[in-house]
Amino acid sequence: MGEQVTANIKKLNKKLEKAFGGKVRAELKGKCLYLTGELQEWDDVVHAGFMSVNKKKYTVVNDIVFAKQQSTKKPFITSAKLQDEQPDVLVIGGGIVGCSIARELTRYKLDVMLVEKEHDVALHASGRNDGMIHPGADLRRGQLKKKYNDAGNRMYSQVCKELDVPFRYTGQYLCFKDGWMKPVMFASLLYWKFNGIPAKFINRKELFKNEPHLNQKVKFALFFPATGVVCPYGLTIAYAENAADNGVKICLDTSVVDIEVWSGKIKSVLTNHGRIYPKLVINAAGVFAEEISRFANDRFFSIHPRRGTNIIFDKKAAAFVNTVVSSFGVIEASSIKEAHSKGGGTIRTIDGNLLVGPNAVETFEKEDFSTYKENIKAVLSKQQKTVPALSEKDIITYFTGVRAATYEEDFIVSFGKNIENIIHAAGIQSPGLTAAPAIAVDVSKMAAGFLDAKQNERFNPNRKAIIRAAVLPDDERETLIKNDSQYGIIICRCEEISRGEVLSALRRSLPCDTIDGVKRRVRPGMGRCQGSFCSPQIAQIIAEEKKIPLTEVKKMSYDSAILVGSNKDNI
Ligand SMILES: Cc1cc2nc3c(=O)[nH]c(=O)nc-3n(C[C@H](O)[C@H](O)[C@H](O)COP(=O)(O)OP(=O)(O)OC[C@H]3O[C@@H](n4cnc5c(N)ncnc54)[C@H](O)[C@@H]3O)c2cc1C
Image 1 (cartoon, rainbow, N blue to C red):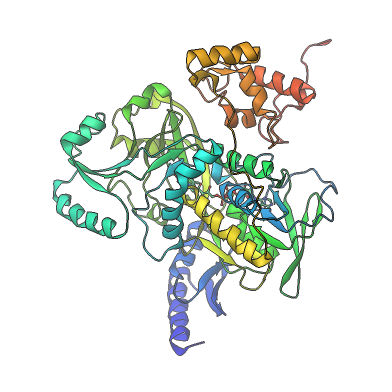
Image 2 (image 1 turned 120 degrees about the vertical axis):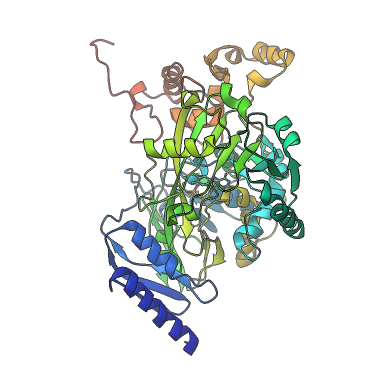
C-alpha cells in the first residue's frame, strides 16, 4: 500500500471517528475499503459509505451493522427439477438487465438458463420505473453510466422494432424560471454538443406553443430530442419472450440461495429447485447483486437501496403534458436522500397516461414497495411547480421502486475480481433501463469470449407482440373479430381490452397465469377503475385456461391469493 493511500485512510478514519463517535472503522484490503462497526440510523450507515468514496483508489464495501437488516424474500416452493442442470451460462435476475442479456446471449451457440426468484419477470426495479429513455445530459464522461446510457439510447429504435414494443423519442423540456440563467445555459449547450448530446434553446413563445400548461413563470427551456418513452415491463417481457423463443430456459419462482466456489471458480449454484452446474454465472440481481457477490466470495461493492415513488394520472389529464417536462432547480439537495435524484418530472407515457415523479429516499428495505402518503404529496407538489394543472383528483394509482445504487454511484459491468467465471452487471440504478440494451451486448460478448462460443445462425431477433384490437383500423378489427370472435368480447372497458387479448397473454412462450401478469401484458386494470370491473372476469378466464380452481388464481405471486373459498354453501 502506498504511503499516500495509508495517510488518506488515516485521515478518513479520523473523519469517521468525529462523525460517528468512534463507532465506524475503515480498513483497506487490496482494492476494497471495508467499513465496519454498528450504527442505529440507516442514513448514518449510508452517509459513512459516501464519506469513504475514493473512486480512483478503491471501491467501498459497507459492512456496518444496522439493527434492522433484512433478508431476501424467497419462493416457498422447493423441488429438484433443476438438479444437476449444466447450462453454459446461468443468468441470475429477470429484470431488464438479466432478460436483455439472456436474449443477446442467444446470438451465440450457448445453452442459457435464467433464474428469477419472483413469479414473473420485471417485478422489481424494471417494472417500477418511469419508462424514460434518458438523453444522458446529466452524466459525466468516464462513467460507465454515461457510456451505456448513450449507447443504449441510440439502440432503442432498433431494439423496439425487433421486439415489437411501442417506443417514441418524445423529447424533453428542461424548464427555467430565472432569465439570468440564459447565458449559463448557452455555455452548457456547447458542453453538450461537445459530448454528443443533442440539445437546443427554446424561447418562451415556442415552449408554450408546444407545452401550453406549464407554469407561467417559466422563462425558457432547453430541449433534449433524444429523450424517449417506453413501457419498461413491456420491454422486459418482450426481451424475455424473445430469449425464450430463441431457446433460453427461463425459470421463474427460482431463487439462488448459495454458490459453491472452488479454487477461484464457481462450481455450482444452489437454488430452491436444486443445484445447477453452470460454466459461467451472470449476476444481474438488482438490489440483491451484493448478496450474489457475497455467495460467490467476490464481494467488492455494496448496494444501498434507494426508493422512488411515482404517481400515475388518468388519461384525461394527459393533455397537460405532451412530452417530458422537468424544471431546473426542483431538487432541494439538502440531504443524502435527495442529492442523487434527477429531480423527477412529468412524463406522457407511451400508453398515454401522465406519470409524475420519482423522488429518492435511502432505505434498508430492498423489496418493500409500499407507498406512503407523504411521498405522494411531496412528489406531486414538487412537479406542480412546473405543471400547476396536476391535481390529486386525477390520480389513478401510484407505485414505488427501489434503485440498486453503489456508493460510487456508477454501474459495475465486469468479470469478478476473485472469481473467474462470474460477470457482474450490478449497481444498475437509473438510467439502467436506457442502458440495458448496450450492457446486454457487451456482457454477451464477454461471455461468448470467455466460453469461446460461435455465432448462432438460427438466432431470430424478431418477436411479435399481442394484437391490440382497440388500436386497429375499423376494417382490420372487423376481420380480426370475424376470424376469432373472442376479440369481439370486451373485458376491460377502460382500456378496451378483449377476451382474445387476455387469452393471448396466457399462451405466450414466457408463462403467465396471474391477474397482474395479464395486466402488464395487455393492460386490463390499467384504466380509471383500476380493475374493479374486469378483475373477476380475468380471474375466471385464467382459471378456465389454466384448468385450475378459481381460488388458485393469484394476483401477482404465490402468496397473493384473491379468493379463498365460497361464502355460501353449494356454490
Ligand atoms: C423509481 C425508479 C425510476 C426509474 N426511472 C428510470 C428511467 O426513467 N429510465 C431509466 O433508464 N432507468 C430508470 N430507473 C432505473 C431502472 O429501473 C433500473 O436501472 C433497472 O430496472 C435495473 O434493472 P435490473 O435488471 O438490474 O434490476 P431489477 O429489475 O431489480 O431485476 C433484478 C431481478 O433479480 C431478481 N433476483 C434478485 N435476487 C435473486 C436471487 N437470489 N435469485 C433469483 N433472482 C433474484 C429480482 O427478483 C429481480 O427481478 C428507475 C428506477 C426506479 C426505482
